[in-house]
Image (cartoon, rainbow, N blue to C red; front, side, top):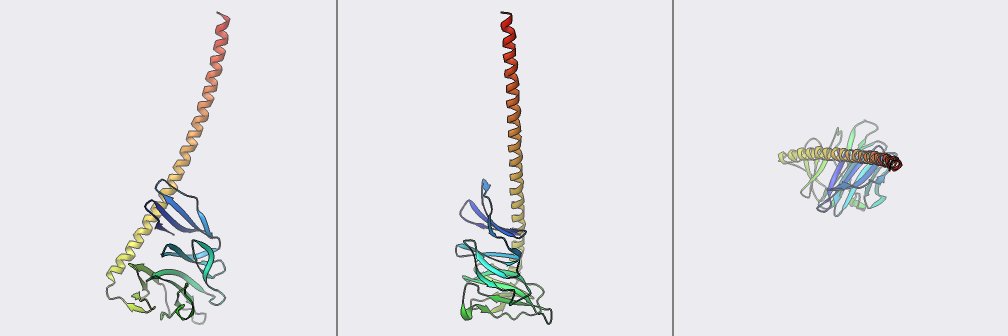
Length: 238
């Protein structure tokens, strides 16, 4: 999975994961730059958002820890240690009124049930942890829309500025937004495939051009050799 962010009128930033690596690439109208490696310990659950003028991303590493970083700094800004929460899943970031929120699921070792946790990874003290009354969770989703943040578990909830969860009465627009997100993901996958195909075509054309040049040079050398030989024979009869 990958996300694309607009940076100026002709530049796009693409963040994505392959195997155990997380990469950032810059794409222009006429090409795409080489990838920059952001992390080499990726395991699962890449989630990324824009807050201010920075892309923040969260993921679960090979040790099972959940890390929060930004693309400007390779050091972890926040870490949920697997030694304290041995069975964690599905980290997701969302921006709520200029606050960065991190959600993740934890398995209760006694009941084997999942519960939802939430923190403000860029804050400290009492405002760090957000109480979430969601036990026995099978799945969840968080997303932002027009500066507001929403949580879906068994229903849609708006996340208020002080970290409370208010049930949404009108879920129609939220479902439409979910469908738009899915459409954007499809468009992104198509875009990435087109980029890969374009690079392959360019490489094939370059190889064809080099082959044509080699054949041309070989023919020229042969023609020159024939011409020189013809001149020698002609000079014998003049």
